[in-house]
Image (tube, rainbow, N blue to C red):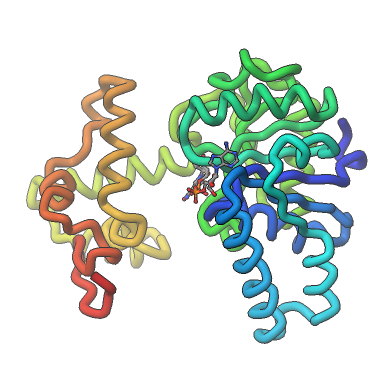
Amino acid sequence: MKIEDVKNVTVLGAGAMGRQIAMNTAMNGRKEGYKVTVADSFPQAVESAKAWAADYLAGRVKKGRLTQEEADQVAANLTFSGDVEKSAENADFIIEAVIEDLKVKRELFEKVSKVCKPDTILATNSSNLVSSKLADVTVNPERLMNLHYFNPALVMQLVEVVRGPHTSAEAVEVAKAFAEKTGKCPIIINKEIAGFVANRINAAVTREACLLLEKGIASVEDIDTACEKGLGYPMGPFRLMDMTGLDVNYYVRRDRYAESGDENDKPSPLVIEKVKKGELGRKTGKGWYTYPDAKK
Ligand SMILES: NC(=O)c1ccc[n+]([C@@H]2O[C@H](COP(=O)([O-])OP(=O)(O)OC[C@H]3O[C@@H](n4cnc5c(N)ncnc54)[C@H](O)[C@@H]3O)[C@@H](O)[C@H]2O)c1
């Protein structure tokens, strides 16, 4: 497969990430004329993604970001399907974004890699499961890799292309070019590692911020201010944790610690305490900061 041969793109999973990856591909890849199909095995997910896409495009037109003609072109290139296997048959590039469940992903890659073309690029958007965990069930795993988008995928530019020991140099090149042609900024990760690059760096910063707080070195507000005003971060680590959810931080670190046994990966006792109290961040109205207007 060469990048010039990529015409039909299939996104598996129409959830938070899948629908945005599909929309990004249809919208920013419209010069390439990419035909994008989003497939999900749950009919309500397909319907919800369809309604979201129509709303999103109408909003872009209203804000003057797209002309009606451009929005119509994007809509014409974006189709929705409840038949995962059928949607894979004609695809040149497949991006999987279904639930984070290894068993589900393994079954899907086994099925899909049998019905698609032998050189269709196969990418998983998983944040935590490296593509090696799918390689033994995938037909021709040299075309398999992680292609890791960030949430919200329509806004965040970074895409991590993660090479597994089974991934060919050609497949990595096609994925990199694909990300560029759809308006993203790809980086290549040469070896599989838990958390890849951006989330590892973020985890290290968050860990240090929690340690400084635990030791009473500085307050939540002052540590955030140090990162924002001294290091140019758009948002300090505590403010960011409030946005993504303290429970997410807790679960990711708990699972990483269970896998690595490295004390550095352990969840912070301060985070554990807050999670126990149900202070999970913006979504509960209180985390490191309070949010009086948040829905409880
Ligand atoms: N949410 C994030 O911030 C984020 C960021 C980067 C990567 N990811 C990764 O993206 C993937 C999806 O995450 P999400 O947040 O979009 O999840 P989500 O729960 O919003 O969506 C998952 C979708 O998968 C569908 N699904 C379940 N089983 C399926 C199957 N067998 N075939 C087809 N579809 C199936 C569900 O109906 C649902 O629509 C995960 O692997 C996750 O690690 C998530």
